[in-house]
Length: 436
Image (cartoon, rainbow, N blue to C red; front, side, top):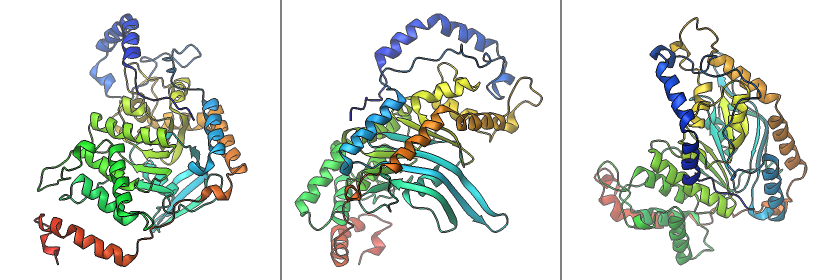
């Protein structure tokens, strides 16, 4: 499976910038003429952009992005050839409802269909409260007891429960022991997670290999740190959390807001490491992410855009910009496409719009246009056919044999933990009281 890198090219960006100097100057002069009132209201109007037509000029798709259907076929063929090393996750007509004592059952997700493939990263995006985390929890089998789920979720075309070692879930918050070093935190987790069939030296080697995969080899002996002790940075802490989750070499990785609280540079380093894991090892990565930078957004292969639990767009990242433009919402030049998509479908700030504006659409109308357009689009049709094809030609059950659950005995874990951490507990002022 030969997947191109999604890293931006400095040379191509420079060349494009030189070619567009006259155009950029024209755009700048137009922007100067706009009043501050115009900037505070809905950003799309007849005065800002030409009406949608076949003559809308789109920025050429980068050559590193391959054709949608060809890319899908290549990935599926690779799965069939090496099915034991890959996991394709599909979901069809997925509904999630939550019980409400006042209003009965309220839908959170409404009839979602999509898939995630090995060696690729899927971004789940949308405004706050749109259902990103709920979808991630539903796919990972982590829904709370007061929710009801309907629809089909398949692994390699089969209705299978996620077994230990099949998947890993990285939560939004880092729960790490601040007095441990990076090496100790990952090594102790390896001792507790990996099976008894592996020797201590093998577990240690696995831990150090995982640390190197996440680019933390220079911080191995640095304390994680917290409120009382100085330690590694926030981006490094996030990578330590990912290290702990991927010790079992899962082929399916879920990440809930992996860049939350990180600056753009740290976010890129974290997501670039995850991209390399997906690309090199054929892992399937599904991540909910909020407002990624342009560099981070380019690392993703597919985009799932949600609004109030409905599908606004699901498909290749490279085709999203054309989809929005064809429906009357072209992305302004020099704007991050991911920011543009979220700004278009975020209705939390409709109250700030100027009342009675001529030729302007409300966000709710924009969302309805995009939702209905996607349902009738060829992209949606291709996605449904793709999911049906995977389910109709499932990989054999023998290929779904994953690592066995934790085999370390309970007594071994109880004995290992306090002996390893007794000294570390005494070094933390807040945890010294729990020392036996």
